[in-house]
Image (cartoon, rainbow, N blue to C red; front, side):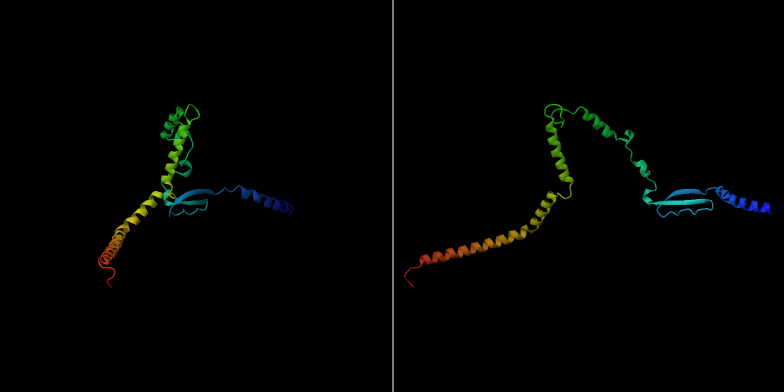
Length: 175
């Protein structure tokens, strides 16, 4: 009996150690696109799915799309950098050389015109064109009205002149 009393506590003490030796379940992490189904987890595998839009299926992953390494720089930018190396003097916008400030004014003016053309809130050209179209749509009607008014005034003036001429022909004392 004494052996049994010693063996029972040892048996319970060994149970947590046996539970720790069980293998961890495998974790399967997947990215599914659009309406694709996420695979069902098996007994020994946990499956976790991240869902992305269907449009992302064949694209380069986001973390690989943009890189600031020099190898990924466009050739155009490299050529422009080489061109800027010797830009000094007149029209260069450089503190080096006489007249370097002249280029700064030109750049500011060019930038202002480019901004004016691309800015949707500044659309004077479009507003002027719309106003011209509105005026041209009524110009025939306005011209006809003006012509009618002028003809009426001419008729009134002609009638007045005729009345004055007849009044001048009549003798003044012959009522």
